[in-house]
Length: 481
Image (tube, rainbow, N blue to C red):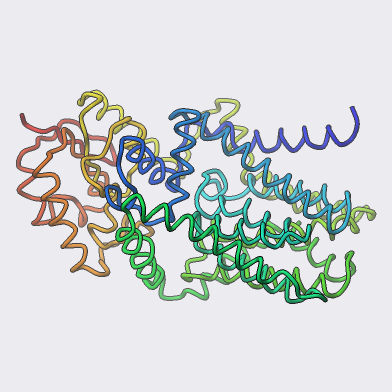
């Protein structure tokens, strides 16, 4: 077998190992788009009949996955494998165009490795930040091939997955402005406008425009402004150092590229500014969640690929690389190895999903397939696991309590409490008119201050239900017919 097929088979095996054994786990970032996709396939209109605070293409993507492959863990993980394979192919094509085969193989390897051997809750689910990787890379792939119109089109499509795509567009505009000819800026903007307008038109034509503005933009801006910690920059510094520690191979390779890598000074300035603009996506909101760092991965992996194509000639550098890769490989890969070997262990990161599966099994037993349910808390995966539709447009309780999911397991302070109270009154009217067969309180057992019975608007409704089952993290109520 020639080296090239062996290389791609190795990458495929690496990607499969990093994902396929996690079929028994559904991560928090997957639950909401999956629940929204179920509602869409049942005839619900996104943003009108389904509260969804993410751009529309995320829900439509999951609807496509459910339609094509069905509601199974293997379908989700195999979709992730194919997606990451496309990411590596695009990164390979971009690096090859710029610097040749050596840099291309290193870039593809780094993209395959660091989209798998990192914090599982960030790396495994195809959430908005990870789904931005492919179109982000495609923007610069088409720029390198002198197709700015297609680059803009990719940025416009990405905008409907994650609004941070505007940073990819900004970096692309800087890339074009640094070219000697400075040609293509108009076509870049036109491509972005065309794709952006098409997506917005689809939302408007389906009747979801007002909800889109309210949920994605007004709620999104409010979320971004709700402080996560009193020391955001200390947190940012700590998490950035953690990221660079686990990604030391990329940091070393990028440093080598900027020191003595291929290309001319203009090209290095383009890559450096691309990195700087992408880092703004990590900083946005001052939360520095691990998944936010995927905004930085495309330029960092590309520069590292070029740097290691040069450093790989030195044995001492390869030894340093082996050590740098061993740390994330052992830290994150051992979980997949234990799962593959069916080795029993306590995995606290997946405890809530395990509880959701137990709760969903009770829900499925206590209700008929056509009956609807309502889940209180940020537990939308219960809809997916139980294969039951929601009785309300609110698939999770953040807009109902005003307490964000990044803190609601321990804290109870609400922001925008008046709006939350108004939505609870709306919810009470919804459920009074069409009472669900099952109510699930998936938040109260973790944080009693946010239990569903604590809210005056919902207390009368609860009088019609009795506690039928209970898990460690959920109380399941059946309607008293």
